[in-house]
Length: 195
Ligand code: SF4
Image (cartoon, rainbow, N blue to C red; front, side):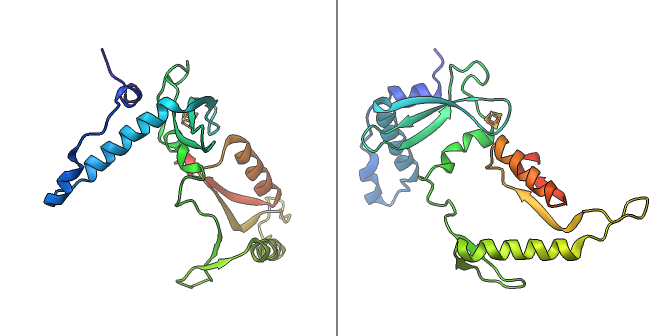
């Protein structure tokens, strides 16, 4: 019988006793990772499981979110093997879904600013950042419309501003961003998910 990763996690129940090996100077990284997986297996068995659909593209892969019943927080997201579209598999983007949750300690939570030509990042507030962004966009649009069409007419094309979208935005957010960028006259619009 073929054992899937998920099946393996769920049926495995105990942590081995190899932790004591650390006293001999052995690298226990793999053992620890294994123990964490087994601990996760126990949590998965006890969790409330909720199905949902990946929001990133129109493929619409199915996901299972495991919610810790005590904390009420999601601690694992993986492909749904019973979903007819993806049958448990996910692309790299979908597989990284859990990193979007608050559990990801590396998620950027504050505004960071680096002055033109500067090397250091400074922490700023949104109250500081939003008026500054608006000012810069307005100035760039006021000075930046220089392109002309074949008839010599000035066209609303803001060629000094570019927009680079994150790969962590969903289809609806992409639509909103592109609509906004086009409305501002931007033509240099790209998205990490395209590459
Ligand atoms: S997992 Fe990948 S292919 Fe599936 S819906 Fe999400 S982005 Fe699209």
